[in-house]
Image: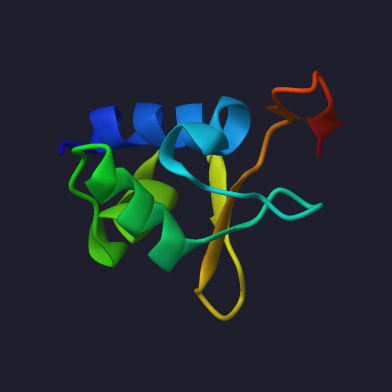
Length: 88
């Protein structure tokens, strides 16, 4: 998966449809990276930690952030969820 395609996929699942790959975000919008990778694989998308980190580090819009311990990721901008709620 290329950087731009991966960034779009991450935006989709982290901001709008985490349930589409069986992902659950916590109250602050964080997702476990291992769960994200596993869910993406079940959906036919190959992700790995190195690719995710590259997207976070190199995208000029800085759409994502990693937790200090490197185990979680979240979208920096607001999230829309199935129930219409927004998380910042």
